[in-house]
Image 1 (tube, rainbow, N blue to C red):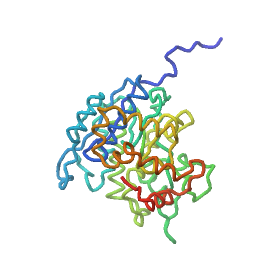
Image 2 (tube, rainbow, N blue to C red; image 1 turned 90 degrees about the vertical axis):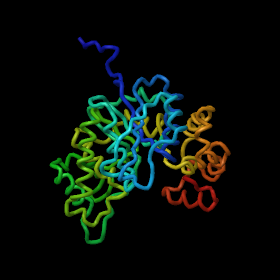
Image 3 (cartoon, rainbow, N blue to C red; image 1 turned 135 degrees about the horizontal axis):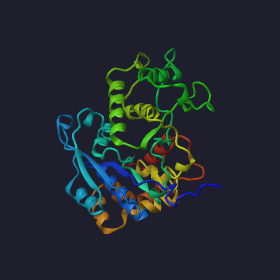
Image 4 (tube, one colour; image 1 turned 45 degrees about the horizontal axis):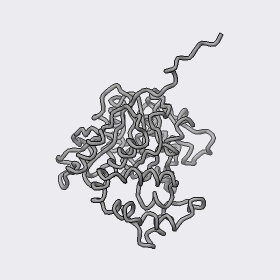
Length: 338
């Protein structure tokens, strides 16, 4: 006789969301993310924590904190703004905020990190995350490593990192892809990732990133690690914690539940009608609009209709394969902003 399954079985446990928030573009993007979450997933029960870097030696030329209007708008939408000190990265490598910002989350509670330039388009709380098996976004290109003539190949480069940290390299490979093709090797976009414990994840992420930056294996001598450091360390962390490539149950991320839109002109050029509708609807309420209009790209693209002029330039069913082709055409038409 089959064992009965409880009604609670299979449900996604409550989890927290982490965003980075700071003055300027990222703060406006974080506000748009939270507004879209509240609109399109009103049932979300977890905490939304906006990690805010604080002024200090690594931000010597700039105060990275949110502006007052950004802060108030985020808090009215129920986001919690938690400060953190930049001890290792700061202005030199702002992508490191997502590594150091993990310390803002409560230890032992499942989390999902999102880049702030993401819009929620559906019920995020219904995604069936398995937090015991961390994963990250596969919406990526083969940006790292860069293979030089007579230099180490993909296998030698990646294996040197796995060996350096005492990890099993062979089990990380996608054997359906050919040798020395970048897609064979575990590589993510760091636009979203998740795990069971932000402290364990964050401690390992920081350790791996600093080691790669400061004491890399010999095979990395010819490689530039900036701006890719977060994406070089991330697969190693996920593999070390028992995770890997996301399964089909997570297809809603980078699908019909969230979209990492990245840059507004590119979003209008290539994203779905549903994504653009969700983005514009989230930006429409007056309490959100009055803040977002202070950011010129959002004013012109969203509120003054320039985004739809960009959209009219492209056929979403026949887009160029390379992003740089999109960028160049948008720039030629005079619509590029970020």
